[in-house]
Amino acid sequence: MTRVAAIDCGTNSIRLLVADCDPATGELVELDRRMTVVRLGQGVDKTGRLAPEALERTFAACREYAAVIAELGARRVRFVATSASRDAENREDFVRGVLDILGVEPEVISGDQEAEFSFTGATMELTGTDHLEKPFLVVDIGGGSTEFVVGEERVRAARSVDVGCVRMTERHLVVDGVVTDPPSEAQIAAIRADIEAALDLAAQTVPLAEARTLVGLAGSVTTVAAIALGLERYESAAIHHARIPYAQVREISERMLTTTHAERAAIPVMHPGRVDVIGAGALVLRAIMERTGATEVVVSEHDILDGIAIKTAQEAEAEQGRV
Image (cartoon, rainbow, N blue to C red; front, side):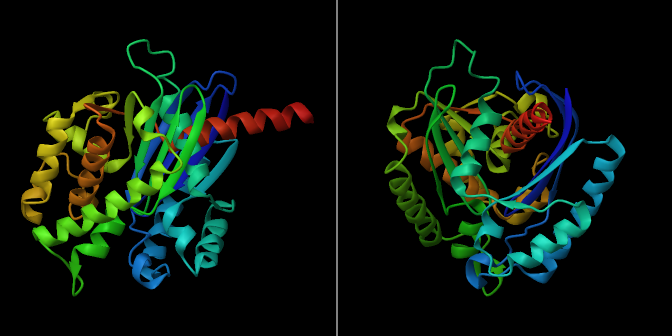
């Protein structure tokens, strides 16, 4: 086993996984997994720059994660940055800050690389599952982008599109700096139009209609699942591999878009950082299911973090073998 630390810094949250990993089988023994909502992508869609306060929130989380990594003694650390830092003009400020705190330079990966990591993490436990039909369509609904990847044991096609819960919220639901609560029908229609255009774009590369099992990742999907399951608190074990039917996804999507901030915040499993963006995120999931004809979504708590950890352990062993 190789002890590695994987960090995934997205548009809405930054997450850490420290695990012992078998490079040959991909088996992971989780030592620590945590998530902090930092909203790194605050305003990026409009300004093209990372806001100073967003950077400071992110660096504060990095300091916390650095202490955890040191305590657990990870042999290799890998920091992957996704949508917001790809889009930002001042991403060098972000890179320097992370390097100073963690001693590693963040890899600002492409959408296609993000999709491959997500597919590896999400399907490593599913490839031998007889009752789930292949090919899989893995969808990772993030804050700034959504990744689509189709494959069996390996990736066959992947595409990243600029539709995510934060980007859609900021683009269509924020008026004079305030999130519309609840949104108007016209605002919802505008989000839906962007999602449909993004699905058209994804379908040019990824054969969406060929998928037989839809696998959903990231906070919007897991939050919808937690609500559908009626959980009183967030329980990862209950959510992982839960199968949520389309009818429930549709109902929850409608509820998230017609209730107030206070009503959404009162849902026991709702993370405070998702209260304003869950409506857009749930709508993205619903639209994907309608476009593909999926009758259910299989929810995975294993995602890009697990994929990063597996690949990092494999690379560490390969380097050791060359020495």
